[in-house]
Image (cartoon, rainbow, N blue to C red; front, side, top):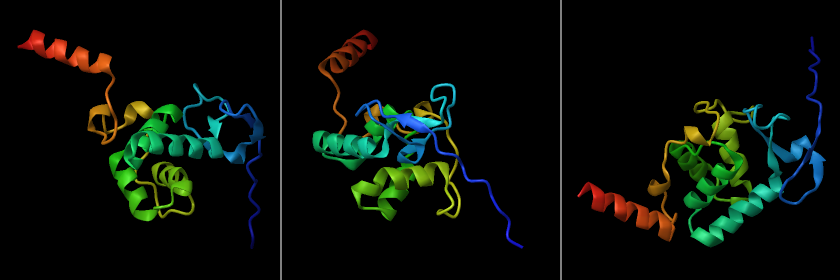
Length: 150
């Protein structure tokens, strides 16, 4: 006997990057309802991909690009999820989607690797990402700290 399931209703969401309103299926879901009350990141999927491409041109590495995008979307950057995404998908147009499916789990994946909530749960720090450059102020602050410690 077939069981009828209730489809998730689509809500309209506003993309803060391009200022347009789209159905929620054009956005990635987010687990933190306190920050994102509708349950979606504030950028549409196309703008997320545009951001990834922007940072790819700026940094030259997909790892640094994805780290920056994760920070903007307030999703954790988990090294093993990133590495699995690279293994499964070389197409940057689907990179964020593949990462999301691995991170949060989806019906198309066998199971989620783990569950996390926000960028603060990332397991890789700024200094560990290849292609991420430090600002002059950051370098000066590190030098001053080293001089004081010495």
